Image (cartoon, rainbow, N blue to C red; front, side, top):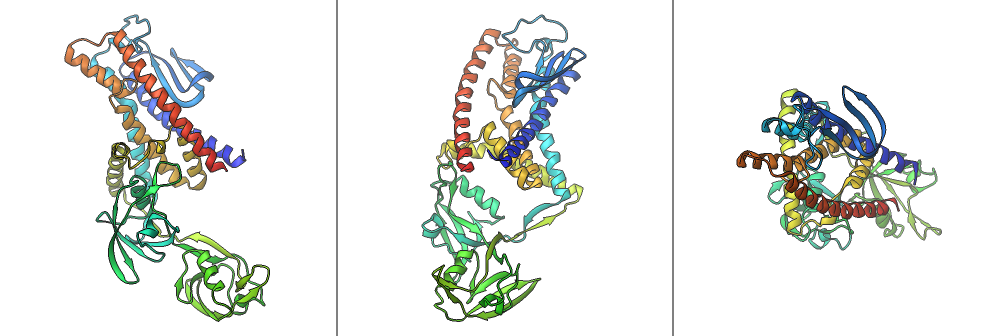
Length: 443
């Protein structure tokens, strides 16, 4: 394992630990506010690596970083309860509900402030609502639908295109479903449908199209080469060859190779100025094709602009984004049920750590945005009325309010054990998928 992967894992664990800390902090502060005795506040499970005790509470960092907990007196139905005034189970229903609700609420609030900060400091947003296609994979769903490099995507399912990330998201959760696109081609605008296929064995959809890429001169051409004689310099961006727009360096290789030594016109960009030069490719015996003598590099066109929002606008945008993120869980589950996303596309703690670490190494702002997304989903998932979640606690409290008495400790324990068994099986499956996915990425 390379040092890069080690840093990725460390940063991923750090990011996940932050979210767990925020969640448990919500429970902890609510418990203290309600006068409940807190026995332990732990980040992680298992053996306690670091711990201190203060005012009757043990604060610790434990060996297994996938989670954490706040242990309160009188909380667990399988433990002996002493019925002391500061026990959890003797508190009024509203106090117990507040404690259970506080953890997920802190995750949502934390994400909301992260998003507000991102929008104020500057968030990359698409320059245009038109997506210019750069690369179309051969024999892909897009190629079969008639999409070609240089085409423009105007609408997706009747709505204006909102950047490549939004397009990838829509295709990713639409395996086997027809997606309506309005595109612009050399012949004009037309409406087509494209059906995403599963990407590899990852459980998500793809149609095989990618953004435009900038083909640039990676090294100074030799003076006696066709490009050197024509005045091409290092870092020039190749815009077109013989009128064909460049979206990928293989396009340029194909055109030069097919020139059969005839003069070609190269249009390039240098310091904001568009220039052109004619040159005659030379045959290269070693490469067995025609060359003009440049070493090419490839970089994605920057089709984003940094937009800084004032506080008021940022607060509104953060609220809108928080709602979209919070409801994405249910849209995702709905697509799984319909077969448009595979169950193996889900990620557990192992996958989350990998993704957080990878994004953190590549782009700090994207990593903060990802933390906000995971934090909101952590909060929402914990509010679902499932026995072992905070939502399960709230459900038990609602039943207690309606019945006038709580569910027996024995029955609570049985329900929690059944739920725990189900989630252990699901956790093992998702972890296996995460590890398999990670091993593919490391090859």
